[in-house]
Image 1 (cartoon, helix red, strand yellow):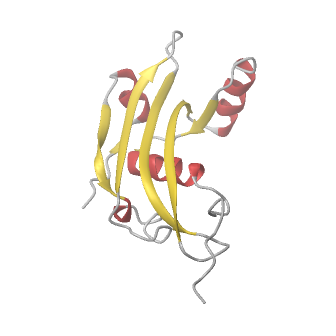
Image 2 (image 1 turned 90 degrees about the horizontal axis):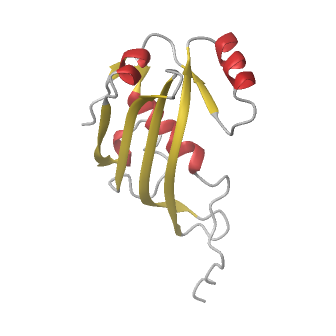
Length: 145
């Protein structure tokens, strides 16, 4: 069973804590239904950090080779999930908007995180964001006649 740590976002970033490991995609409630085999292993790493001005961030990495159902032939199709993203942390929507405006020249993403941040939820979100909208083979094999 997957541990679901809930952390203080500012403390996690300030102290440069990390949470990482390997687990089955089926251990994530929202992901368990998405894949042909929920026992495929997923690597995750979430580390807190701060930018040069002391603004809190998390660096999230996920990697896995999964199988989804091809929406053309309904057979399993391999899907590679790879994400390596840095997210700025904001306490509110207003703070997120200010931060996005201040960093408008940079390609950054801001996430609103209240006093408790569910790290497993962050990993789940990253996997979901990397999935194809319509998983399909490049070329589907015709069924045997």
